[in-house]
Length: 142
Image 1 (cartoon, rainbow, N blue to C red):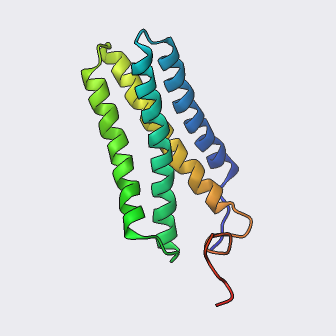
Image 2 (cartoon, rainbow, N blue to C red; image 1 turned 180 degrees about the horizontal axis):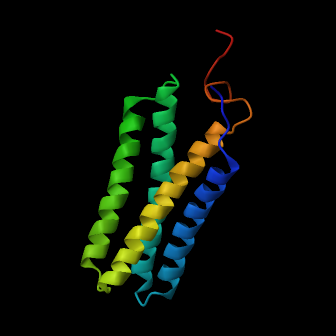
Image 3 (cartoon, rainbow, N blue to C red; image 1 turned 135 degrees about the horizontal axis):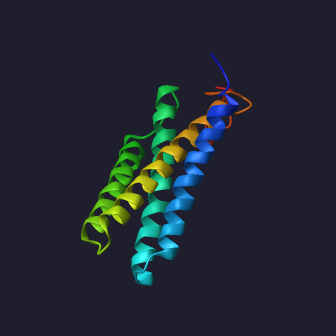
């Protein structure tokens, strides 16, 4: 069951990631807010992207029988939820129009979905297939 992901889904995943990130960052660059606020929202996006890729990888590793420590698995989920909570708190307290707050929230969620889908596609289309080699610390000879 090593079926490759369709080119259409791969393309749509990259488009979702790009549209979410570009929309979010262009909106951030054009926003009339202090540089420290822009830095906060930039950091939230980068933190969130890393967190969701980490969740996707650790969930997939567990499904394929690749060992993932409970601590790393839990931290991945915690970081994902924390990034969403921090964005929510930031937007709740921001002096932005409700439409701007919604724009940032949906761009953030679109980028998170895109990152998960791109990570999934990358793993599915890996040349040596899922669950085989390429993992640091695995010894296939034993």
